[in-house]
Every structure is written in C-alpha cells, then in structure tokens.
Image (cartoon, rainbow, N blue to C red; front, side):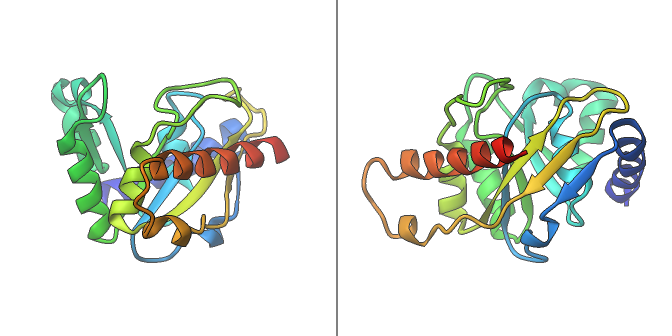
Length: 192
C-alpha cells in the first residue's frame, strides 16, 4: 500500500517536473520474475525505473542506508534490501535470486555506479542473478537529464533472449551476457 501511494505521487511529480514519458511498458511481463537492467546516471534512477511500472520493483541498496533510523525502515517497506559496500555480498545475491524465484521484479544497474558516458563496462552481477533465477531480462534506457521542466524519457526494451546462455557452462558466459545487456542499453540510449 505504501509502495503504491509513493509510486502514485512520483508519477505526478515526474510528469510535472520532468515532463516524464515512458515507452515499451508492454515489454514487461505482467507476472513472473523480471530483471530490469538500466543505465545509471543519477541517484534518482531507482524511482525513475520503477515509477511507471505497474509491478513493485525491488532494489539492492547500500547497507549504510538501512542504519538511518526511519529511512532504513521506509526503504525496506518500498522493497529495498541491503548490500555491503565494495562489492555484492553472497547474502545480497542470494536475496536477489530468492526474490526473483518468488516471481518478483528487480531493478539492477549493471554499471554498478553512476556513469555519464556510454562506454562504461557492466559488472557481472546482473547477468549471474538473471541466469540463476531464470528471470526475464528487460533492458532499460533513461534518456535525458534531471532538469526541471525539461523532457525526460525512459524506454523499456524487448526481453533479451537468454536461451543461448542458459545451458552454457563456459567460463566467459557471464561476461558475454553482461556485454549483451550493456550493448542493448547503449543502443537504446543512442536511439533516444
């Protein structure tokens, strides 16, 4: 309920402040596990990725945020779970996979950190989580900058076909999945 209220408020705020527009929402399955893999340009990106989606989107958030008395409880209510700084912990990976196996949606930023460029490398965590959970992978492109009254867009791409990777046990499979995800995101950003 709190999530739905916050999402409704954000939809209004984004529409007014950023003339926010979303395309490709029909590419997100109505049920089952989904990983939304997006480029990462700002601290505002997590709510941006989830605002227009009609399903609850869960995120990893740095563990320090959960130590802030009321804020930690609030973001946990919104579906965030902690990850230790300096790399993704086994607990965070396990939580993500379990969350997806329960049929939920998760937002992930494969770059791992905010990036203004279009050539930043992705980290393998998103690929590993997607492959181990069997989730549908949707590439997401945030287009524009967070400037008041300037138009911003978000594009949800068609699912990435993971069938070629699922049975692949080669040592570089995670790298190839990551490269595929990042290439799709970059192409969508470039298309504008």
